[in-house]
Image 1 (cartoon, rainbow, N blue to C red):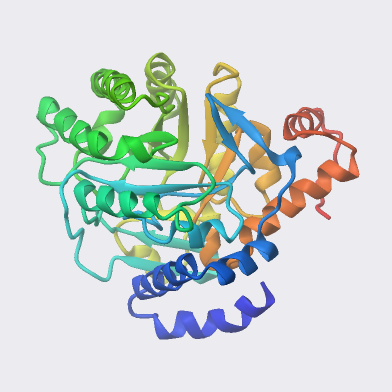
Image 2 (image 1 turned 45 degrees about the horizontal axis):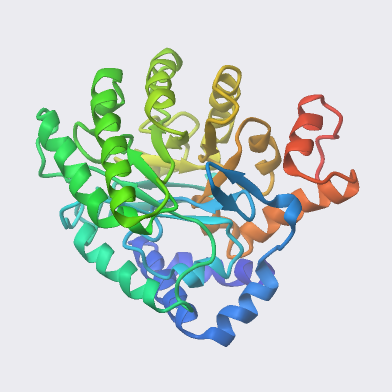
Length: 380
């Protein structure tokens, strides 16, 4: 953290006109880490927390700790072993559409440092499902580059597919699924990006029901053919949905899937003071934490206990404990930009410290006591 705080101003200055350059630097560095065993091992020794008290299993998938890397960083399945070395409990690849697409024109990623937030209008830039499948196949054959933590595959709609043609949209998702499911410990249907026209209309229950039913049926067929378990199916939702509409959509997910991820970036600019806040796109980061906690508190009251809730949107070491009151797992990405490479370590050390301090044997025990208000608000 201290080293990163020294170099962060330089990185931000060098990439001030196009923050996406810093992302590409990060990918290249982590790809190198993935290929150098002694280096990845050394980094893992310093950043990975191995403790059974942080471990949880949902629908047959074991997560070694509750802090994952959200979709949006490893868009094409790059650098998975290098990312793992920095202490994450799971990684989500994507979002991956079936068709390769360049995304929106650059610049399309903007930092708001004073608010520890980002705005992006990437537009599902991707090499496409066939290329991502080829990369993951090559990594899978080289065990030193394949991560030992769960991998989620986040599927999205190809931009060129007419969003008003539900049959075409379903076929597009299934085409990507057929290529990528074999690599997925869990699958995510992304219907929440603000940067793909018409995509968010698939959060409407009727459309969502058709889409999820098709993905679920295809998932069972593919798993049977491959002799593999059926991966849990999650849906990623947006902040920009009314609580009543979210409740209706979640009732569909409960019927067809095993969990939800909330929440994707917002087009709202509430609380934004940075001049770059005027840029079009989805806002992520610290500004969303309070709203995300409110929504997760709301939905945690009535969803089935085995329905997995993954919290994303403003998660960082200062609030990860609060998020885990209402969600089973968390994801972060923007806070990796601002907190640096040790952000997952910081989150996990805090959680483990609280478990040790109170002589607890699992996160579930911590959550129960937290909800009872038995812990002070301060950290360690």
